[in-house]
Length: 173
Image 1 (cartoon, rainbow, N blue to C red):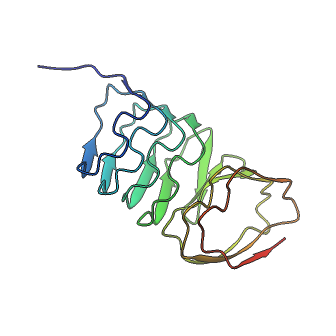
Image 2 (image 1 turned 180 degrees about the vertical axis):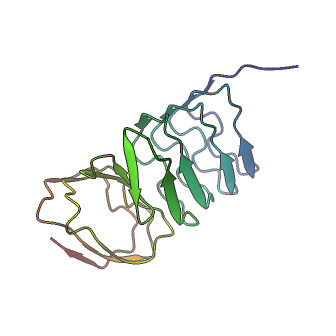
């Protein structure tokens, strides 16, 4: 039997520790907020090119190690990939009109906003010269291996819980 699931609803698999891998069908266009949040044992999630929207905290607090954002994704909620200690890189397909990555960190296309730093990012991060104006909500949440960050003089706002549960010991503004 074939199912044409178009959306994975809010909290659909929230806190399901038994989920280890997810192969989302190509019929899905939206992954709603907290859909897989707190699935601690989730290590692999294949997000198809059909997905255009990923909700806030959709994959937060999971064990995923990499994320690939296709060019059709036009909406990513705050904290979608926050607090994922095994996540070392976020990649955006060339041609995406809304998002970009630089050194594995997810930004708005124009680099004005940091959307998400992978939880497994370690060492220091220098944002000088990138034109970053805003640190998005939960952008560095759970980045326990990130020890220091240098913010540029272009920074205008730091959103809700941007550095929550991070390992940052030094911030230069």
